[in-house]
Amino acid sequence: MPYYAVSAIDRQGIRRSLREAAPDEPSLREKLRAAALWPVTIRPLAPSRQSARLRLPVGDFIPLLHQLELQLRAGVNADVALAHLAEDSPPGPARTMLAHIHREVAQGRPIHEACRHFSRQFPPHLAAVIAAGEASAQLPESLRALAEHLAGSDELKRTARRALIYPTIVLVATAGLIVFLLGGVVPKFAEIFISLHLTLPAVTVVLIRTSTFVRVAWPALIVAALLLVGLLWLAARTPKLRRVRDALSLRLPVLGETIRCLATARFAAHCRLLHEAGIPLLDSLATAADLVNHEVLAGQLRRARESVALGRPLYASLPAGHDFPGFIVPALKAGETTGQLAAALKHIEDYASRRAKERLATALALLEPTLLAGLTAVVGAIALSFFLPLFSLLGGLNAH
Image (cartoon, rainbow, N blue to C red; front, side, top):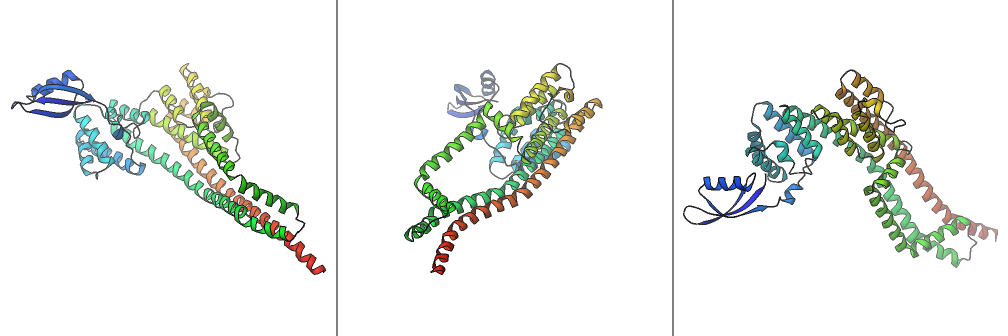
């Protein structure tokens, strides 16, 4: 509901400045006259962008959904339940968000429309689930399904992050060690070898030249690294480059299957959530394609949606040679032929999530020895480059 800045005169002739909410300006004028106020100026206020950008951590948002669900199941009105939650919340984003939604609902606005103000916290697919719950008088069930969906998605994200922590640390440490050796240690040994007029083996010559290149061309290397980061950023925002990147990601050994299962779990979770809330299948597929976060699979879902719109079942609408896991078609077929599509999507979500976690564990188990072997090989090659000339020098001294 829009807000207006009002300058009005009361019965005592005193000018007052107010901030009032109303569906439109004529309704606001009637409201002011009923309060014995004579409006002088009425100016619409732009929505607060700062409040619209508020977003709670998932760990704080899910308990609020459960608390609202419990109060609604107990027969408490939505505006009263929201008022209680706002009062019980500590000062901060949660209280601001709940207080705003409560004000809007208390003035007769539907909950899903009040939630849309906070577009970051309530993206279109979440607001659509709440809207469907209100329309079907099953808002508590919709809130519970929403909380479970957010908890499952957050668990997948945390699993992926945990899997990346160790290899990231090892890669950063390895890169720092190599830069330190090439920039600080190798030049000292090079000066010693040159002063002794030794005939250096090929591996030592290559190492010294690499060290010289790094020390001389480090500004160009930094620029190249920044260009690479910029290219990756551009690839994440250009549809064609995203499609190429995502197509290549599916071909990666071990990780490709993990990415495939993660995207499939996201599709099944979002499609099931919307379908259970009463959203038509075509709309559910369109939203799931936008949220799958993989251009190749999203394109295949959009083509499948076109076939579903012509009357074909979903399991038969996926394009030939699609990149979804093989288990998705039999599960969808069983669900659609028995009228249990939501249950089939839930099975796909659970199985794909479990398989993705197993693949992540496998990838991590393979990555640890690979990184350690690579680190050992790099440090061993550098150490060998140091010791070979020293062995040659010692051998010459022994001969004399």
